Structures are given as structure tokens and as C-alpha cells.
View (cartoon, rainbow, N blue to C red):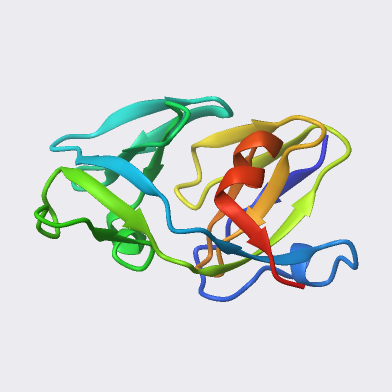
Length: 151
């Protein structure tokens, strides 16, 4: 099973940018519910267990799916929806960031930048490169409702 590793370094990974099948896409503005964890914990996502550190954001999406965004990357990806203040729990809107994505035709894994959280993708899932050194997995139904392909 192919394994993709998040680099933790800004910029798109060569694994996606050099693959002719990749597409550029943009996140659609969608509301998500956010809380910030006060202590280290684990988040059970559809793709696997992710480790969260104090201050990391735990998000819940439109289909009830949950995921973690590190404190270091959160402000670049989401903004609070008033009256929520930045750093407070509540509704946030996703920013229309550009990503690279590759729809996979076989099962695959992604090792996150923390070096311990590993996600497992299924055939038809999307391998997503956020351009900030982090990779992720997005199921086809969620990709179709939260991203628009721009190339």
C-alpha cells in the first residue's frame, strides 16, 4: 500500500505536484464547528486516529465528520463567524485556499507531520496537499461538496 508522508515544510509535495493526474482545487467557504482542545487527546476520524496537542482545533463538518487542524495552521485555513472571536469555540468559515489533490484508485496511507498519526484512504478517496507541509485524505462525497476543481 503506498505511503505518503507530510513534510511539515511549506510548499506542495513533489509526490502530488509531479504526478500528471493531480488537479488544483479550491476549498469552498463552508461553516464548521470548532473547539480547541485544552489537553493532548486523540481524534477518531473516518480515516484513522489522529493525535492532537493542547491548543489544536477539533473540527466537526457538515456530515458530522471530525478532524484535527494544528494550532500552527488553523488561522491560515479558517476564520471565526461573528460573533465568535478568534480562538474561541464556535462556528468558523473555511478560507478559499488552493490545494492540490489526487484521486486515488487503490488503498493508501498518509503519515501526518507529527510522525505518529497515520490515516488510511480507500480507492476513490482524494489525497490532498494543503501546501503548508500537511497532507490529508478526503472521501469522494465530502470532496465533491467542499472543493471546486480550478484547473
